[in-house]
Length: 144
Ligand code: DQA
Image (cartoon, rainbow, N blue to C red; front, side, top):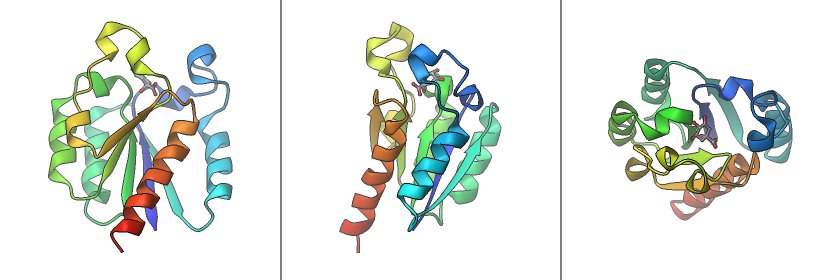
């Protein structure tokens, strides 16, 4: 099983960005733990601060991988282009947020990408990524 975690803008700063909200672990540190936990799954990682680059990556992997875990950061709340892209590809996309965006500022309550994703996991800290892996594993099993 091959999946990819795609992180959007400012998520390269995990570990030092508002640790009270996003925790003190860097993505690289977290990925070490996650990959050790799921040694049977090929977990790729990509991050970009650029909307178009996120779209390029989604298009590149979106017809062949088993699943995509997408934390689009602030583009979640604004990007019709990302929504269109997720609709265009065939690989299931799980929307992920580290924080619970529903109990934060009002402008974070709406997700432009949610209607195109199979589901959303939010508010469980870095664990949100692991729960998304579990969700994708579940889909993969039931489609066998
Ligand atoms: C985030 C929530 C977004 O509102 C914010 O812009 C982020 C991170 C999260 O993981 O909690 O950059 O997606």
